Amino acid sequence: MAAKSAEERLMEGKVDDARRYADEKIGDARKYAYEAKDKFDGLVSEHPLAFVVGAFVGGLLLGKVLSDRR
Image (cartoon, rainbow, N blue to C red; front, side, top):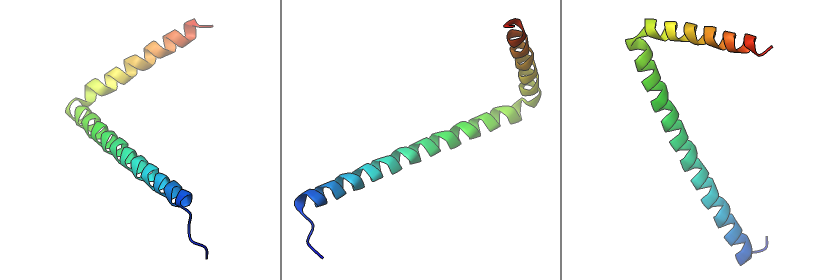
């Protein structure tokens, strides 16, 4: 097996750096998503009726807007 050239080693290093950077950003996105989910779950559990009423009213408004577009 032939020894790798300096250019091949440089490209492998860049690929490894890009992979580490992508893994870090994916980890940050996962952390943010879990925090947002926990916050949302907390809000819903504190005021479940308000959440249901808000969703119902939002659905009515959306239906009205969509029906007016015809």
